Every structure is written in C-alpha cells, then in structure tokens.
Amino acid sequence: MRTEVAVVGGGSTGSSILYHLAKRGSPGPLLIERGPGIASGMTSRSTALVRTHYTVPVVAKMALLSYRFFRDFGSLLPGFTSGYRETGLLIGVDGRSEGLVGESLKMFKQLGIKSDFVDKQEAGRIEPLLDTSGFQSVVYEPNMGYAEPSTTASSFASAAGALGARVLTETALLGIKKVPEGYSLSTTKGDIEAREVVLATGVWSGPIFEALGVPIPLKPVRHPVAIYGRPAEFQGVGPAVFDFVRSAYYKAEGKNLLFVGSMEAELDASSPGADPDDYDEGVTFEELEKYSKWTSEVYPIMASKGTYERGYSGLYDNTPDQQPVIDELSDFGYPGIHCLVGLSGHGFKLCPEFGRVMASQVLDGRFEDYDVSAFSLKRFGEGKLLKGRYDISTVG
Ligand SMILES: Cc1cc2nc3c(=O)[nH]c(=O)nc-3n(C[C@H](O)[C@H](O)[C@H](O)COP(=O)(O)OP(=O)(O)OC[C@H]3O[C@@H](n4cnc5c(N)ncnc54)[C@H](O)[C@@H]3O)c2cc1C
Image (cartoon, rainbow, N blue to C red):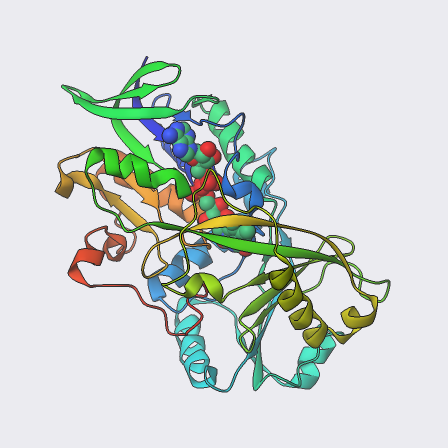
C-alpha cells in the first residue's frame, strides 16, 4: 500500500491531523491505529477540559484558537459533534500565585482571552456550593468547558473519511525504514509506503523513537481520577474549578457527577514512570482519601452527601517542561517524519490547533501563522525549556 501521508495513532491528536490534512486537500491521507477503533488510547480517558488559561503565550494562543474550534465545531464540521459544553472556570488562587496570575491576566487581555479576578461574592453567585474561604482570590473565565473526547476524535476521523482519508484500525506500526521515495512502515497488516509520516502515538511513543535512534525525554506518568456522585442540591452542569491551594481540579459533569483530579504528583520530576501496557489503572486508597478530603473542603455539601462512584487512572506523556514536541525529525536524519507527542496531560484541548499546525508543517514544509519553533525537540538538549509561570505546571 502506498500513500502520500501516513499518520500513526488514532487519538485526538492523530484524528485531528488526519482531518486537517484531508481538509487541506492532501490526497487520501492514511491513519493507522493499533487498537480496535479511534480513541483506543488515552484520549478515551481524558477529562477533556477545554480551557485557555496557560502562562506560556504560544500555548495560550493555541488554546484560544482550539477553544474557538470546539465552540464552533458543529458548523466547521457539519453533521459532526465534539460534545462541547460551555461551563466556565473558577480558579481558586493561593497567596503565592496571586501576583503571577495577575501577570497572566495581562497577557490574556492582549491575546483576547476573557479572564479576570472576581470578588468572592460574585464567585459565590457563579457556584453557590463552592467554599472560597481558603482561597486568596478567585479568577473567573467564562469561555471554558468540556467536550466528549472519544466523540471528538471519531468526528475528526469520520469527517476526514468523508474528504477521502482512510483509517486502518487493528494495525500496529512495527518499524520504519527509509526507502527512495520516503519511508516504509512495517505494520501488522503489511508494509505501507509513505512520503511523509506523522507520529501521534502518545504514551507509546518511547520505543518508536528508540528504534529510530532519536533521543526524546518522554515519561509516561500515572494520573488518577475519582468520580463522585453529587446530591440533589448540587445537580447539573456547573463551572469547573481549579484549586491552586490543593493543586487539584474538579469538574461537575452531566447531571450529577463530579470528576476530581490532581495537578500535583505528575509535576514532580521524581514521580515514577509507568509502563503504558502494565500499570495500576485504578485509584489507590491513599489517593481516594486525599481526593475525598479536598472535595469535602472545597464543596462542604459533598462531605455529608457526596458518594464515591468509581475511579480510574490514565497516563500523561510528560516531557521535562510539560509541553508538547511538535517537530520534523530532519535534524536526526529523518526528513519527512514528523511528531506531535509529549502532550503532558493537556493535549486534548489543543487537538484542533495541533491538526492545523501539523497539516501545514507536512503539506507546506512550515507553519507560518505564528512561531511554533519553541516546541522543537532540540529545546531539551539546548536547555530552552518552555517553563510555565506557576508551580502547578500542568496549568503550563
Ligand atoms: C486521566 C486523564 C485526564 C486528562 N484530562 C485532560 C483534560 O482535561 N484536558 C486536556 O486537554 N487533556 C487532558 N488529558 C490529556 C489528553 O487526554 C491527552 O494529551 C490526549 O488525549 C492525547 O491524545 P493523543 O492522540 O496524543 O494520544 P492517545 O489518545 O493515547 O492516542 C495515541 C494512539 O496511538 C496508538 N498507537 C500507539 N502506538 C501505536 C503503534 N505502534 N501503531 C499504531 N498505533 C499506535 C494508540 O493505540 C493510541 O490510540 C488527560 C489525560 C488523562 C490520562
């Protein structure tokens, strides 16, 4: 089989790239996915928060453009949905971060992101059940919400299919070798020749880069999520909450669920790496105890009336600065092999813009709307890390 462009990995990243390639007129781009369907990997475990609060300006810009894509998804991809629901975001800020958050808000204004400090009375009007007494101050961002991650990826892949793209599931990449007109991908369903290749293989990327001899500092790190049932007084879709005091996030989903996750452990460079094919996919008693304590402190009603429903863990594909690698591997001897990996726990919300950037990189040889060179792989070797402003680097 031969194709102009082969995308490896059918999560939110690869599916969006496939769609944007097809939309740009790439003839019959091909996506291979080793799982039984689109979103077989970490995308399906994502809490899928879509927000713009990032302290690295280029990431905030990508988040804003991606947010607009989610908001307008149905008109951009007629007949398809991302399941996006706008909920707003309240950020409970601690004393240490307050000045830094103020700096971020100035940058957001320049970019056109709506976000500002609100007094606690106003915060209480937005979410009456939130106890803000432990926060130094509160920020409100109205343009924030969550989407359905698997649906988003499937929508991108199906819309790409309608434009002539092809998807091969249950097809695993086994190896890549150079051929005169590009690369030959050895897969479990036979060889595929492609002029250009895009790796969007998430937490499974390590061995693929290793086989190519390309050093990349990726570490899969476990991320547990606890899901609580909310009582009758606390129903419906409400604002998500970022809690800088406890380094936690809370997402009121659907009718009566509350998803709770940490923004702390995975920041620690010493957190142990995990094997993507063999890790604890549940939530430990200690994790649950900690999450329940946070939840009860922040939403006092949950202390007496909340119920624990279930929990699970996924993996983040962390880089040392917790920002993605968007690059072509030419410097490593592989012109025409591109990668979009190392999304470090915040790659879902950026998937629309990832697709647009990578489609330009592949089809035009460059992306010129704004400078994405800061995401290069060589930044790690050169010590040019994209460090965010806060200690909570998942916020980036
Ligand atoms: C619990 C959790 C919560 C999260 N919450 C958020 C959030 O609120 N907001 C946000 O923006 N982000 C969030 N993230 C991060 C976000 O979900 C991920 O960054 C994003 O979904 C990754 O998408 P991906 O396509 O790069 O990877 P994946 O979805 O993992 O897709 C990679 C695909 O590649 C396939 N693959 C791998 N190796 C091969 C091979 N050799 N051959 C063929 N196919 C292969 C895999 O099967 C997989 O389907 C969260 C992540 C987790 C785990």
